[in-house]
Image (cartoon, rainbow, N blue to C red; front, side, top):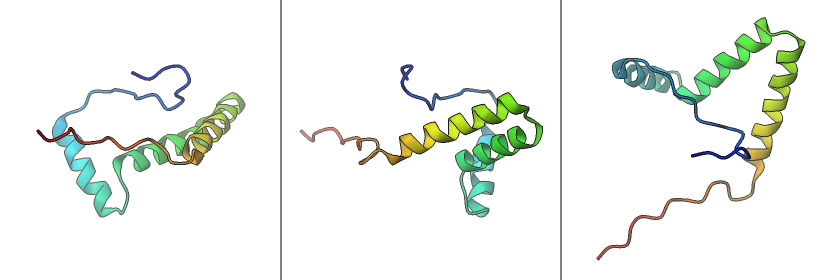
Length: 84
């Protein structure tokens, strides 16, 4: 579970699994992925429909993402379990 210092919390929403799987195929054909496409849609909606407070929050989120992505080494790789 993410703690308060983790700025990119997971969000959960319900939709038919077949839609999620289909969306993966569609975004792959578009040369992207579901995450990038959804983030772009959210950004576009905030830019188009947001007020000043929303735009400031968008800028804050951009800064948090930039800081997170700039960490050297990124997230540690998961190591496979040791073979017996």
